[in-house]
Image (cartoon, rainbow, N blue to C red; front, side, top):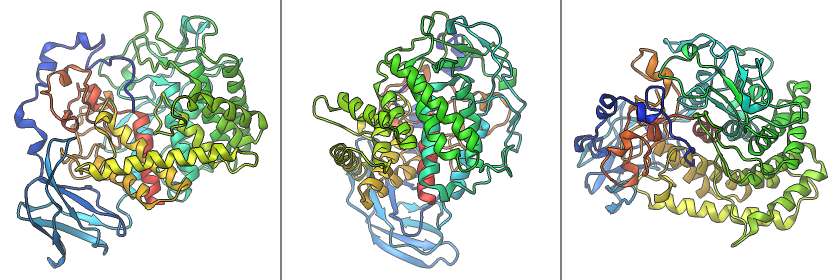
Length: 579
């Protein structure tokens, strides 16, 4: 995921410059804290599916390995380790143990000359709890209602009043609530909600069997609407509330500045609906994002609530109409606004996604034609490149939904280009996975702000491409990213709070920092290693290989914040693996 175009505060209101010296100096990183202090044998701390590829990384030299069943101590597999090689991303010298031949469900340990690993599971249910926990993490991010995850992770309803900011061309109270707090702060942003909500709705459509019966233990549980869709609707309803009568959509709802590290109900800064500050006050990217998401929602909610589905489709069409008439209204923070900007200099990809989803939903020719004419900008240079999506580059979602629409009239030439380009990009990700000592698909340049989200979206790319262009290597590489995120990395760390045997502990997340509970709120994915940190903690890190540019520190917002758009592809990946 590309970094957002703003600097977040670390611990108190007023921006990074206002962080007390004592606070950020306490985050100094010594050589003793290097990743090399973690276990020499690393793997997915959740375990593995029985018939899946199972690769374990070792950092201490050894010739052979032995796998034993924990229950009996019996040897179930012996083998030779792969040749030692240098891993550029981590700077480690590694060997790989391939234990794929172990398929019987149970608990196991790996023994080598370097010692014995922690125990790990092989089983059909290895990832079911992870799917539940990461999706339920969205309930913990809810704004505007009582939240109670159990074990003390709770807060009363927050941000129940709102006002139109002068930049919106309206004034006075705004009667809305809901949505998900975007990240470690309490802002809500249409643009980032777009890719997050869209990704989750795609998971519903593609892996319905895995998510349909999830009991998320949310306030709506037990109702007509499945919990998965009910949780998404909490955010979707808020997105719809930011649509103006003319169809345009305001960019975000935040205070003028970030609040301090307080619980959400203690944030008393005014929650403003914020516009561009000049006519037409709404922004193109936000409006097109809503059009795309609402069009998907019309498909997903129809079987349960026909009236709501029609409301979503109407909103999508009105939003697309506005965005088509105002195709280049960009958003920059108006004077006096210092919260997340999510500025995007090119909204053509958002418009393309909106047209594609509307065509897939409605079948109306105008939307098919809009996709086929709108795609021309992607053909410049070397031609269409279908690469992993990001909040500010949604062209892949547009092209994939066009290819999966299964509607008559689609251009055979464009369909072939989408499939061929997707396969080329997926092949490159497979090669990255093979070359990486920890199996992930990231290139050396992908370790930026939100690199764990990049890994998640690359898995989404591989899974969708596998559907368009069947290749078992694509789904295997997608799973390798899960293994990386949940322990098979140079930190021997799970980057999801309260998941795995050794999860990170100090996210840049206000509820986790203000609730007086030692462990953070559950089910949230850290942004992960960042070779170009933008916070004071990161600036103090010695320069190391990109995977090692990380610190589990609340103040390290450019490495250790959480965000809804990083959790979404992880939920998508877990839905695929559980299907």
